[in-house]
Image (tube, rainbow, N blue to C red; front, side, top):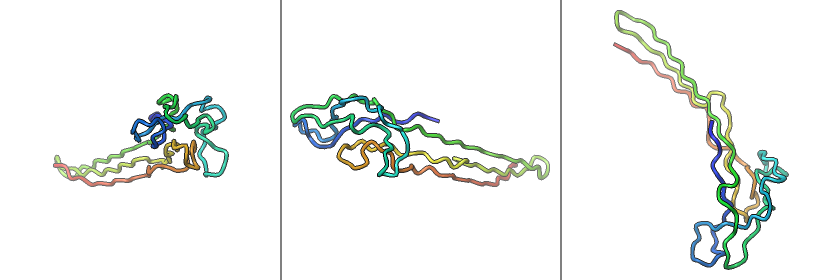
Length: 143
């Protein structure tokens, strides 16, 4: 289990006029967690990971005041299990059967929230990451 990665609401256009298009912060005008239910969204419902109305575009020639890492993406959970069985064959020889299962309950983890304020799903989580159940079986001859 691990906590989610930090979010920062930015946009790649140069609002401040400094030539940097990596990502300039927007203004935070209210608490971004106020009114957000932090639920998965189908895209057209009222489920938001953070409140998109809490951010506004800064005035031209200025940087936004939104702090970094104020909001976090959802945490991730992955349970792994490994089973081993040794069977004696003869003397010091044995066969080992192994079964390793990664994400054995097949628990889906969510993607991060959309942080681009110009996108229609801004503030929403609309997809799952690529975690899936993987099973690995092996047979070893030990001597």
